[in-house]
Image (tube, rainbow, N blue to C red; front, side, top):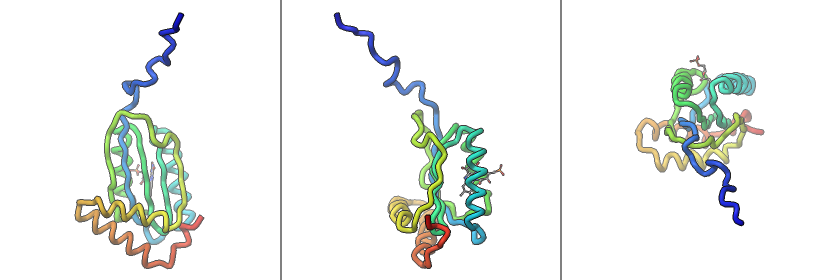
Amino acid sequence: MFDEYNFPAGAEFDDAAPTLQTFVYCSRAAEDIDDDAVGRIVESAQRRNLTRGITGVLVFGSGVFFQWIEGPPAQMKNLIAGLHADPRHYDIVSLDRSEENRERLYPNWEMERVEADSIIPVLHDALETAEDENNIAALKRILEHISAGPLNSLGRT
Ligand SMILES: Cc1cc2nc3c(=O)[nH]c(=O)nc-3n(C[C@H](O)[C@H](O)[C@H](O)COP(=O)(O)O)c2cc1C
């Protein structure tokens, strides 16, 4: 009389979820990074991430980058090393790096341009929880840079 077997098979189990490494950071764009340079970073990141199973979001505004990336741990390790060696940005502050079995938060690759107003609260939050002295100093430098204005026109949408 009752259909006891009508459950979606395995839908609520996480066993099949892949191991994802997440890296979240903010950084300051180098002096010579203009709109075209950001376009080039995004274009090549999009192409490379697609072949490496990396997805996420890159936010840029007022000369500050904010990036959330997630993907297979081995691929992420290479990308993170590449990011740290990349002269197109500096004062890289790691806000989170973790590994979990879960579905992706950002299944696609996205790029957003934001105003300074959207970045400042994120940086203040990071500063409140930061413990590493280098990170605290870098976050303060980034906040000072944004507050010193005039607002970087590159960041405007
Ligand atoms: C703000 C910023 C974000 C970047 N995001 C990515 C990315 O998501 N994926 C990627 O492959 N490279 C990204 N890059 C480029 C990497 O830093 C690096 O140049 C690239 O991975 C090549 O590294 P390799 O020379 O060690 O192979 C980004 C660079 C910057 C400055």
